[in-house]
Length: 536
Image 1: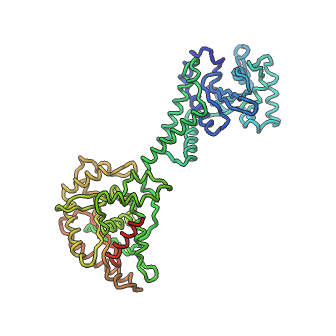
Image 2: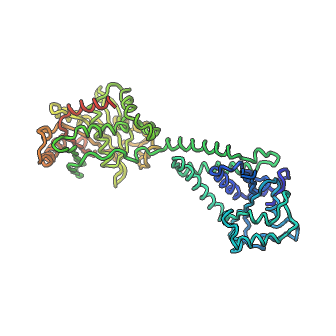
């Protein structure tokens, strides 16, 4: 497209460019380039040329005039086509039209961006300026243009020899390819600032960038301020987009995808009684030498406290610098509900840690409170990905001293019977729907079930009831024994058989998994844990 001075009529040019948008993408690419170019001063669209980049240089301003050519011919660009005049008219060739855009004085550079490749003789133009001077092929090319149209000069007095020496030629395949390259550049720039934005976020930012360059080109020539974008303003625009990306990332970060807490519990045994929908999973804290690892267990559970006590929305706002504040924030969140039930918290943390590490679970809500027979109870809800599909595990957990063992087990079994009644299931489902934050969780297959109008029968098909019982172990209470693992495995199997026998027909159609964690002394563990909790 031939350009004249800034004040020339633009009616025909603007009408033409509305049907042709690849130069908007080229302008968007150059706008991104200015972010990394400290010498750039401003970008202009449809002023002296399709695009003009003005830079500061050692000797003053450098004006780069950029023309975008999208001719439909099948052949490569060659010398003849580049220099051919229309009906012999002076100044009508491609090279002359580009040269004649130099109307502003100062140093002039030129750039052609085409959708067709160039012939072998024009290839030197595609190499970076400053890396081709003195090269025989390039000097021959400059010499060729120095002989052409010596009577054609720009308003600044430059000839085609000057034009050819300062010409850079770029080839873009099509609009799709430059779009892809520009979005990749956007992503790279964002990653350089510590962000990894989602694809749709990058696409949205890029569409806004192209919209900006398009509006600059569409603005009337009389409104020069609307056709120019300074580097300072481009950088401000980019900082605003980065802020939006950060907010979006915090809004959609999958907070449970990376497990930062090392695995701790070792599996003692696993029994799958699939025929009766029952399962046993038992885990060992282990010894270090002859000492049961109570201190290490306490620290491990405290590391999980933020995930259990804080919502994913809050977790997403913490970076590595502020993460040290999480335990304190977690404790305050717990205490807002009243005095902390330390034994219950310990057992809940154990179940959470095991589900996260051994089953790849993500919590919907780690603590759901509800009334059962006038007493406040709590459960947890985790999504567990299994080969047969995603399941919702509604967990109960208890830390049990020897003198209350049987009573607590009976209490939990009574809770389970209540849990599968229609009213309680609907109440728990409604609470889960309120607490669930899908943008912070990986994609699952439960959207059709976790709706307020869903059937409880559908919910029961994907529900499993895990019970974790951390109990005073006779084996561990007797002190270290080299054969303790054999004795412990026998003990947890006996415990499983007793509890399974107590699960009556009311739960025959529900998957129930028993998690057993033998502990040396439940009371001592609770005191140690609370003391460490208060010190954090």
